Length: 289
Ligand SMILES: N[C@@H](CCC(=O)N[C@@H](CS)C(=O)NCC(=O)O)C(=O)O
Image (cartoon, rainbow, N blue to C red):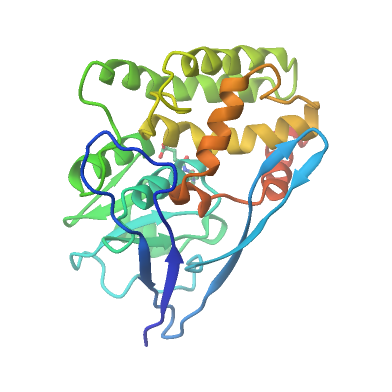
């Protein structure tokens, strides 16, 4: 039995490195589950965050349900279908999901969400032995690591190119490698002095001031924005809630970047409810051992 359902999309706000025409993204996703088809209704809150509280705009999004330990594998693994295994909650997987969406590959790359708390055993045994998400099944091989995957998708699939090949390439690579340090610096401030995190956000503000032909890291939207977005999506509401610290205060470029990202259709559908993100970060980073 098959159920078809639509995921709306678009290239809002997106300018690409190549000048190819932008695909129209109106996608049909097919999902099988135990011979029954189940829909997951996802209410995405647009996370416009301010010191005075959430401004919430509800959009109903329909996405495939997460597979659990009782779910069978997709109809037949390694049948030539390209599959992106993610968890809806994983920021690393979110990077690859955004890349797929913004390149207009919803029909070429099937989304397979996994419940990480109740993983199907076939995922580790047959698909990806490291047992992490994201992973990509393509041409009968499975690859992992989000930063490698976003580049892989950018170069091996159609759609607008999202990474520079010219003089900005080296700087773009540098910014991609900085994501790790950025993450560690901000997270290490959670239990201590928030000004430590300030240095990392100041660095982003400086970088964002370099190019003035758009609000994004390299001026125009790229994989660099995709690499940072899932983390800033989490840090911004968490730091306001827990430290009363607004990362955009005194950082107008960062504020404009967040606004620019919130206009990218392929990103919008991947966002989580900020309240859930805050609660999950509280449990993860502030709970006493
Ligand atoms: N370096 C990896 C990190 C991926 C990762 O840590 N994924 C987490 C979820 S956010 C995971 O699968 N954890 C499961 C586990 O470690 O068992 C990447 O960039 O893709």
